[in-house]
Image (cartoon, rainbow, N blue to C red; front, side):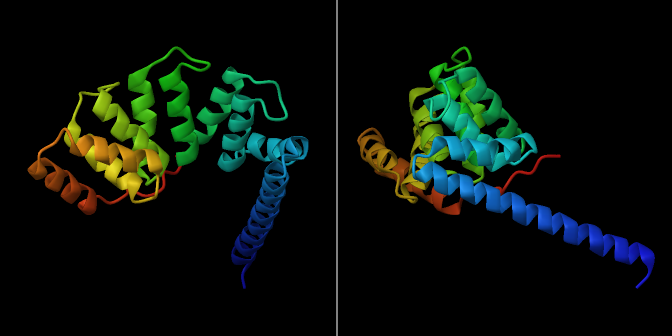
Length: 199
Protein backbone atom coordinates (compact mmCIF):
# COMPACT_ATOMS: atom_id res chain seq x y z
CA UNK A 1 0.00 0.00 0.00
CA UNK A 2 1.46 3.36 -1.03
CA UNK A 3 1.67 6.33 1.33
CA UNK A 4 -1.31 8.25 -0.17
CA UNK A 5 -3.59 5.18 0.17
CA UNK A 6 -2.37 4.61 3.74
CA UNK A 7 -3.05 8.24 4.66
CA UNK A 8 -6.49 8.04 3.11
CA UNK A 9 -7.30 4.90 5.11
CA UNK A 10 -5.93 6.44 8.30
CA UNK A 11 -7.96 9.63 7.87
CA UNK A 12 -11.08 7.55 7.16
CA UNK A 13 -10.51 5.46 10.31
CA UNK A 14 -10.02 8.61 12.41
CA UNK A 15 -13.18 10.14 10.97
CA UNK A 16 -15.17 6.98 11.73
CA UNK A 17 -13.85 6.99 15.31
CA UNK A 18 -14.90 10.63 15.71
CA UNK A 19 -18.36 9.93 14.27
CA UNK A 20 -18.78 6.95 16.58
CA UNK A 21 -17.75 8.99 19.63
CA UNK A 22 -20.01 11.87 18.64
CA UNK A 23 -22.97 9.54 18.17
CA UNK A 24 -22.29 7.89 21.54
CA UNK A 25 -22.36 11.36 23.14
CA UNK A 26 -25.63 12.12 21.43
CA UNK A 27 -27.18 8.88 22.69
CA UNK A 28 -26.00 9.59 26.24
CA UNK A 29 -27.65 13.00 26.01
CA UNK A 30 -30.82 11.43 24.67
CA UNK A 31 -30.94 8.92 27.52
CA UNK A 32 -30.47 11.71 30.07
CA UNK A 33 -33.12 13.84 28.36
CA UNK A 34 -35.67 11.02 28.45
CA UNK A 35 -35.02 10.70 32.18
CA UNK A 36 -35.54 14.49 32.47
CA UNK A 37 -31.92 14.95 33.51
CA UNK A 38 -31.67 18.10 31.41
CA UNK A 39 -28.33 19.22 32.87
CA UNK A 40 -26.61 16.04 31.68
CA UNK A 41 -28.37 16.24 28.31
CA UNK A 42 -27.04 19.78 27.86
CA UNK A 43 -23.54 18.70 28.90
CA UNK A 44 -23.58 15.95 26.26
CA UNK A 45 -25.29 17.88 23.47
CA UNK A 46 -23.81 21.38 23.66
CA UNK A 47 -20.27 20.40 22.50
CA UNK A 48 -21.74 18.30 19.70
CA UNK A 49 -24.03 21.16 18.65
CA UNK A 50 -21.12 23.59 18.62
CA UNK A 51 -19.17 21.14 16.40
CA UNK A 52 -22.04 21.07 13.88
CA UNK A 53 -24.14 18.03 14.90
CA UNK A 54 -27.60 18.92 13.55
CA UNK A 55 -29.47 16.52 15.85
CA UNK A 56 -27.82 18.06 18.92
CA UNK A 57 -28.46 21.57 17.57
CA UNK A 58 -32.14 20.76 17.11
CA UNK A 59 -32.40 19.43 20.66
CA UNK A 60 -30.69 22.53 22.10
CA UNK A 61 -33.26 24.60 20.22
CA UNK A 62 -36.03 22.47 21.71
CA UNK A 63 -34.66 22.85 25.24
CA UNK A 64 -34.39 26.62 24.90
CA UNK A 65 -37.88 26.82 23.42
CA UNK A 66 -39.45 24.99 26.35
CA UNK A 67 -37.05 26.09 29.10
CA UNK A 68 -35.72 22.60 29.84
CA UNK A 69 -32.52 22.86 31.89
CA UNK A 70 -32.08 26.46 30.69
CA UNK A 71 -34.13 29.63 30.95
CA UNK A 72 -36.74 29.76 28.20
CA UNK A 73 -35.23 31.81 25.39
CA UNK A 74 -36.99 31.90 22.02
CA UNK A 75 -34.11 33.73 20.35
CA UNK A 76 -31.62 31.02 21.37
CA UNK A 77 -34.15 28.38 20.29
CA UNK A 78 -34.46 29.99 16.87
CA UNK A 79 -30.68 30.27 16.48
CA UNK A 80 -30.08 26.58 17.25
CA UNK A 81 -33.00 25.44 15.12
CA UNK A 82 -31.71 27.58 12.25
CA UNK A 83 -28.22 26.06 12.43
CA UNK A 84 -29.67 22.55 12.23
CA UNK A 85 -32.24 23.53 9.59
CA UNK A 86 -29.50 24.96 7.39
CA UNK A 87 -27.76 21.57 7.62
CA UNK A 88 -30.92 19.94 6.23
CA UNK A 89 -32.35 18.55 9.50
CA UNK A 90 -36.08 18.07 8.84
CA UNK A 91 -37.08 18.13 12.52
CA UNK A 92 -35.31 21.46 12.98
CA UNK A 93 -36.90 22.84 9.81
CA UNK A 94 -40.32 21.85 11.16
CA UNK A 95 -39.53 23.41 14.55
CA UNK A 96 -38.23 26.59 12.92
CA UNK A 97 -41.40 26.80 10.84
CA UNK A 98 -43.43 26.61 14.05
CA UNK A 99 -41.42 29.49 15.54
CA UNK A 100 -42.24 31.68 12.52
CA UNK A 101 -45.88 30.59 12.42
CA UNK A 102 -46.38 31.43 16.08
CA UNK A 103 -44.09 34.46 16.16
CA UNK A 104 -41.78 33.05 18.85
CA UNK A 105 -38.43 34.87 18.94
CA UNK A 106 -39.20 36.32 15.50
CA UNK A 107 -41.99 38.42 14.00
CA UNK A 108 -44.84 36.17 12.91
CA UNK A 109 -44.25 35.36 9.25
CA UNK A 110 -46.49 32.81 7.55
CA UNK A 111 -44.51 32.79 4.31
CA UNK A 112 -41.26 32.01 6.11
CA UNK A 113 -43.07 29.39 8.22
CA UNK A 114 -44.48 27.75 5.11
CA UNK A 115 -41.06 27.72 3.44
CA UNK A 116 -39.48 25.81 6.35
CA UNK A 117 -42.44 23.48 6.79
CA UNK A 118 -42.37 22.62 3.09
CA UNK A 119 -38.63 21.82 3.12
CA UNK A 120 -39.19 19.39 6.00
CA UNK A 121 -42.40 17.98 4.51
CA UNK A 122 -40.64 17.23 1.22
CA UNK A 123 -38.18 15.08 3.18
CA UNK A 124 -41.11 13.09 4.61
CA UNK A 125 -41.45 14.72 8.05
CA UNK A 126 -45.02 13.97 9.17
CA UNK A 127 -45.34 16.95 11.51
CA UNK A 128 -44.29 19.30 8.72
CA UNK A 129 -46.67 17.62 6.27
CA UNK A 130 -49.47 18.27 8.76
CA UNK A 131 -48.46 21.95 8.99
CA UNK A 132 -48.24 22.32 5.20
CA UNK A 133 -51.73 20.86 4.84
CA UNK A 134 -53.07 23.21 7.52
CA UNK A 135 -51.48 26.25 5.90
CA UNK A 136 -52.88 25.32 2.49
CA UNK A 137 -56.30 24.98 4.12
CA UNK A 138 -56.10 28.34 5.94
CA UNK A 139 -54.22 30.16 3.20
CA UNK A 140 -51.40 31.09 5.57
CA UNK A 141 -48.30 32.08 3.59
CA UNK A 142 -49.68 30.37 0.50
CA UNK A 143 -52.82 30.52 -1.64
CA UNK A 144 -55.63 28.39 -0.15
CA UNK A 145 -55.86 25.04 -1.94
CA UNK A 146 -58.10 22.26 -0.64
CA UNK A 147 -56.51 19.68 -2.93
CA UNK A 148 -53.02 20.42 -1.60
CA UNK A 149 -54.36 20.59 1.95
CA UNK A 150 -55.91 17.14 1.56
CA UNK A 151 -52.82 15.65 -0.10
CA UNK A 152 -50.45 16.81 2.66
CA UNK A 153 -52.90 15.85 5.42
CA UNK A 154 -53.23 12.41 3.82
CA UNK A 155 -49.44 11.95 3.82
CA UNK A 156 -49.21 12.96 7.49
CA UNK A 157 -52.18 10.74 8.38
CA UNK A 158 -50.34 7.78 6.84
CA UNK A 159 -47.74 8.33 9.56
CA UNK A 160 -50.44 8.16 12.23
CA UNK A 161 -50.71 11.85 13.10
CA UNK A 162 -54.10 12.31 14.76
CA UNK A 163 -54.56 15.99 13.80
CA UNK A 164 -54.16 15.02 10.14
CA UNK A 165 -56.57 12.12 10.45
CA UNK A 166 -59.12 14.56 11.87
CA UNK A 167 -58.28 17.10 9.17
CA UNK A 168 -59.12 14.57 6.46
CA UNK A 169 -62.60 14.17 7.95
CA UNK A 170 -63.13 17.92 7.99
CA UNK A 171 -61.75 18.42 4.49
CA UNK A 172 -63.91 15.63 3.08
CA UNK A 173 -66.98 17.65 4.13
CA UNK A 174 -65.83 20.57 1.98
CA UNK A 175 -64.68 18.63 -1.07
CA UNK A 176 -66.39 16.64 -3.80
CA UNK A 177 -65.74 12.91 -4.13
CA UNK A 178 -63.83 13.61 -7.36
CA UNK A 179 -61.57 16.14 -5.60
CA UNK A 180 -60.90 13.70 -2.76
CA UNK A 181 -60.03 10.94 -5.21
CA UNK A 182 -57.69 13.22 -7.14
CA UNK A 183 -55.97 14.50 -3.97
CA UNK A 184 -55.62 10.93 -2.67
CA UNK A 185 -54.11 9.86 -5.98
CA UNK A 186 -51.62 12.76 -5.80
CA UNK A 187 -50.63 11.67 -2.29
CA UNK A 188 -50.15 8.05 -3.32
CA UNK A 189 -47.89 9.09 -6.21
CA UNK A 190 -45.89 11.51 -4.03
CA UNK A 191 -42.29 10.59 -3.27
CA UNK A 192 -40.03 12.31 -0.72
CA UNK A 193 -37.11 14.25 -2.13
CA UNK A 194 -34.82 12.56 0.35
CA UNK A 195 -32.64 14.04 3.03
CA UNK A 196 -31.14 17.46 2.53
CA UNK A 197 -27.44 17.89 3.04
CA UNK A 198 -25.57 21.11 3.71
CA UNK A 199 -23.33 22.27 0.90
